[in-house]
Length: 114
Image (tube, rainbow, N blue to C red; front, side, top):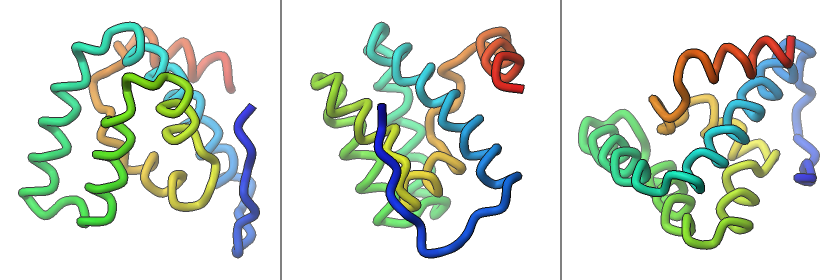
């Protein structure tokens, strides 16, 4: 569904597995955000707080801001958020999409993928 870009470095099997789990979680979070767009404001607030606290670089801030800005274009939103390139994999590992899924939803996704 989402094309992968070739990475310059070889990833270990555990890194690939972790990235796949994180991707599955982000697929579910994308669907939930699209179904419940009112949640985006809280995500934007988290992004701003992390940026102001120096926890996220300017380039990461701009990238996340741009992703959230296209929430009204579902295909583009999912394509960008779920891109399998190295840059997006790194951003997803430090996601700002905290608290979107309930613990039950997260556990169910993790159980399906293990």
